[in-house]
Length: 158
Image 1: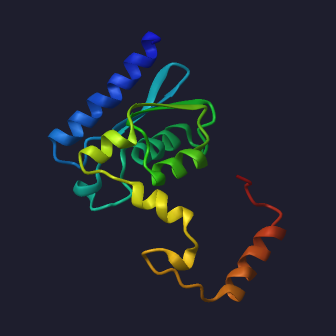
Image 2: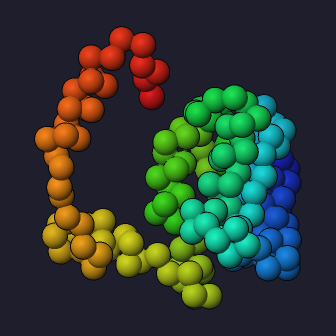
């Protein structure tokens, strides 16, 4: 393995350990790298912040975007201590990094009680077959906003 890859993945693992030892949340860490330098770091902060979205990758992505003053990380690489969960995977795709390197896989995470298989399974189901009820209402009003967005001349595309 390239020495920088090893250094960056080890930093993500170190952050996972720090977060776990400080009781901030689960044992997960992530770093965002640009041009061979770490520009942002994060570890899981779900329980310490009472925020179910405060996963290591999301924390690191948010910080990287602040540092770079952008909402896309297309020239960056993410290193994470574990294969991203479905939520983090979505955040990663929206952020558009060049690559993601990870240490443990989803099966390793499931083995210690972090099993995301339910979410993967739910994504394959029709919306009316999911465990949590999803009820569509107010579509006409919602579509008006979409129509305005479509014709908005000064929007920032993403």
